[in-house]
Amino acid sequence: MKRETLLWTIVFVIGVAALGARYAMTPNGFGKVYVEPEPERFVQTDDGAWVDYDSAEILDGEMADTPFVDIPADRRIEWTRYESAKPIDFFEAEAADPNQTTYELSKPRTFGIWMAAFFTLAIFSFLYKDNPLYKIAEAVVVGVSAGYWMVVGFWDVIVPNLMAKLLPGMVQSTFMPGLETHGVDLQYLVPLVLGIMLIWRLVPHGAWISRWPLAFIIGTTAGIRLVGFIEADFLSQINNSIVPLYVTDPLTGDFSFGDSLRNLLLVIGVLTCLVYFFFSIEHKGIVGKTARVGIWFLMVTFGAAFGYTVMGRIALLAIRIEFLFDDWLWLIDPTGQRSIESAVGMILPAFGMG
Image 1 (cartoon, rainbow, N blue to C red):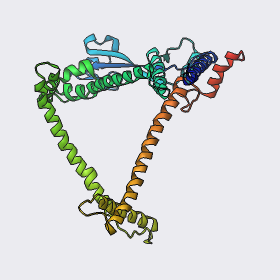
Image 2 (cartoon, rainbow, N blue to C red):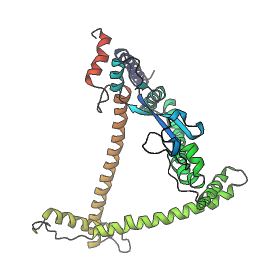
Image 3 (cartoon, helix red, strand yellow):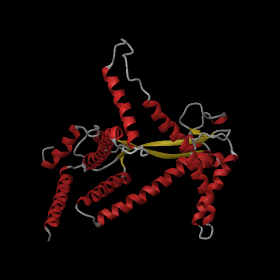
Image 4 (cartoon, rainbow, N blue to C red):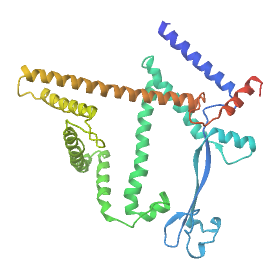
């Protein structure tokens, strides 16, 4: 066995042993997600609108004082929404009443926490080398991300922005009872037709039909982005580059050396960088020296951008490490979800001290 493989095998065994020891030391376990069930009830008023039953003054006529269970089944909808709850709230409620129903363990979300921890460690395994666990995690992340954004696009775009404009009654009674609508708008038949044409690419002999909506999307997007780029980037940068070199304090009227120096460096940087990218004149003499000053400004800019990117990646790494130590292993408690007293109460019984 290679020394590198032996080293990582030892690390893996130690990790599994530490995970088992951590679980044995925590009677209530770790990596669990608790939720608070919240009932959601909607009723249909006499004018056909679906509204929240628990809000005040929403029912009309003889339904005003009718209990929810006595409302006709075709005019009421009920389901349960599960809000995230702190583990400490569940522990306190269980200690007060073992039969409490205010909080409960969410098995699907708990499974999600463990799967997230597994895939995080699988991605980290690439530090060793490219391996099957990393490839599985990579494929799952890409596939789940595509599926997730497809579902988000359906519920956040297609349903409220398309279906609700063409079939408001069906959307309120089937998908979103609390959605506010303003009647049928036949103008939205145009994006519906374009969307159907775009999906036509999946048909073997009709792929050419999808080129029309695709060309429309690319053309309109390019036009919108061009206007936005000119206003937000091009004109804005020119406007921000035209600054006074002599700056005074607006309160006292005295000369502000710091602001003046900043504006001077900004103007010099802009002009020297423009000279560097001006290739119609050979970079010799004063032009060459000015271009070299522009190179220094460019290198500082690129270095700052690179450092900003690295810090962003480090922030992502810190978030994943915090997830492993907080949400999964319960070793830290930065958000106060588990108090010190509860943590000690979970650990002491493992040593026979509780």
